[in-house]
Length: 88
Image (cartoon, rainbow, N blue to C red):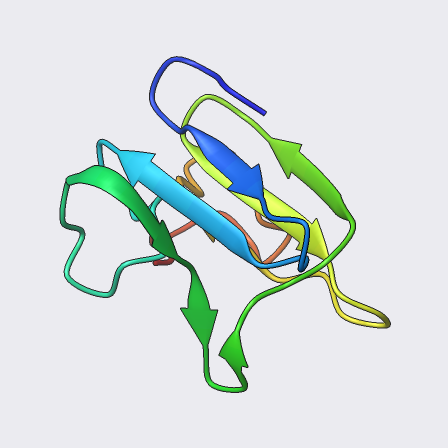
């Protein structure tokens, strides 16, 4: 899935990759870093992988079994955690 600020892709092995602007944490990078090349998105359980991606202008979510990790801009509760801080 490609959008203006958050290019996101899933590989054949169901690993999720992000690149581009990271100012809202939409790359899943704790340092809010911009990325010029695709990098795997990781959480506390390791690489995030799944079969269904949902991508907005500065956030993304992926279906990982019974979990739905989301990251990026949360200014309008896009991540489902309550309005507040962005989440890399």
